[in-house]
Length: 265
Image (cartoon, rainbow, N blue to C red; front, side):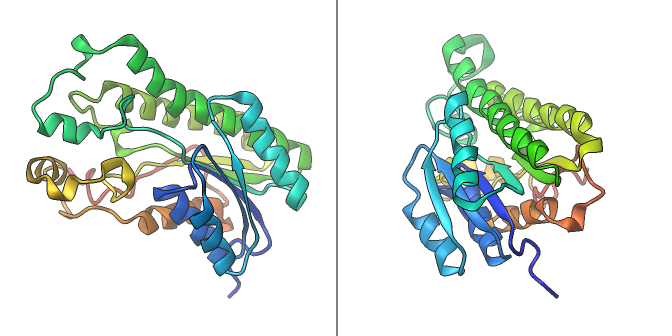
């Protein structure tokens, strides 16, 4: 049986670390060349792709800048001639960078909506929603121009469906990613371009770095995670692979939730 993405070209934003890096590596293992977009250097990700025997290109990209999103896709086409798959993984937990569950565990209410700075709220939505929209738009335009279909995967969160006190910007932004996914999927359904989302639960990435050393925060996270462990980035990458590949050829506009059983109740 051949590899799931043999000979395809994938663009992954947020690919310098965490879920984005794991996805880039897995896609390469499945036969794809990978273009990595991130504001941070992605030397390690590029090395992992090349170790898997595929070609990689890093393009510094701020996904909140539409020209940079367009330039990312253009660079992919210039280098590899086409784009078949896109994963919009760039995102933040909060404007300050600290994870929401750690803020809550510390007993802080500064991030509760009644105390929230409007600029902080807007910053999260700008990155998590507008950045995904601009990424998706650039990818979709290229896929439509090619006329051969394609698959776009957005990284949402289980927080798209679960309200978390003190995490309004994150929850609202990830719910926005899910609805953006559904609308774009509907608009593109007849074109062969599929659009889906992955909604991870608590996953061991830099976004929640240090949580395992914070018993209160970890306990709060596990209280809504029946499997009672953090997800691994490679597990989320496997969900992205399913949605990116032909194995999900009749699936669009959906949210896949690798979240350790959070929605079993």
